[in-house]
Image (cartoon, rainbow, N blue to C red; front, top):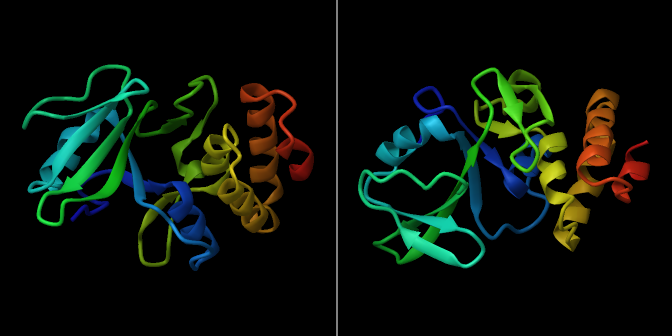
Length: 181
């Protein structure tokens, strides 16, 4: 089990939205967490007994060797529970550092990590909706539209503004920008 004090990870994706809202808002296919690339070895140790597979490019998924690091340029790792023969989570590798959160798709989009990662009352770290929705905007699938609709009224003005500015940079003219005004 991952303990936040031991490994600096945080929940991302749809579960992060639910942690922000305070209750489940929809079904989820998997659990996604994010860590800095330099912290990946700690995550691997915490997940001993599971098999880690790296997603390389668009079409290749392969099991990592016991002490093998994911290749440069890869960011997604799938965690297989061999006992159940089931995928349990995705571990995303982030750029940035302990003080600065950076958007993987465009690291010029940055913010202080303390403003991007929050904790539930129980101490579970999660990426705030502005960061989650920035990732979700690329595809804007029905579940992503749902996540925006659930979060928008709960986000403060600063978070909505940051997201709108970041969307304008990453996806100029994106339809969500108007909804955030």
